[in-house]
Length: 205
Image 1 (tube, rainbow, N blue to C red):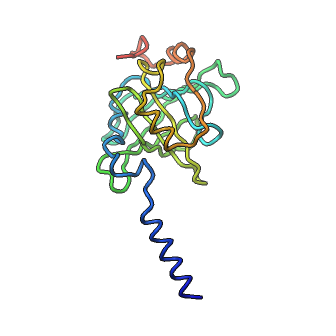
Image 2: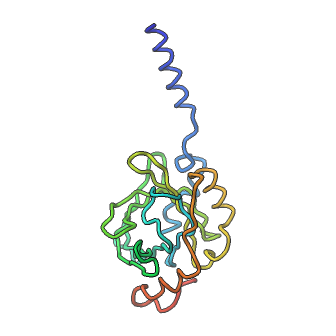
């Protein structure tokens, strides 16, 4: 019986070794998973869609983030926006430090660590897919109990249009099936007054 157990363990190990890595960790997609493609953008990045339920916070309408400035080589100051869970016609804004890092085998930073809610934890978000040309990005994180959550972010110029197929395909093939639309037409007017001094209009260029 012992040899049967050993054989089963070996087969299990082989199965794990042969299993394809998650999309966000697959070497063939590394060129589309660079944090640099996001942090180089000075525009507001708005959440268009995300995994449904309580996997991601916030989970209210109108979420966005904007780079304020670079602090150090791998550190940035970001302004975060999201609608108040109790009163969704009110916006909450705060600043957080965003740091970048890389996971095994990646040669360029592919992880962003930052807060998404006031007083919340600093959470790791991997860049699952970045398409700077079409202004869309897919981020992914895992909770402590290994639940997976994804977000699609878009630039102000593209967020009012359908999600580019490049990002949409990656999102629906590699993220939880249940998702919810986050962006609505009122987000611009709600976020614009909260943009920090020096930004006098909605930055689309």
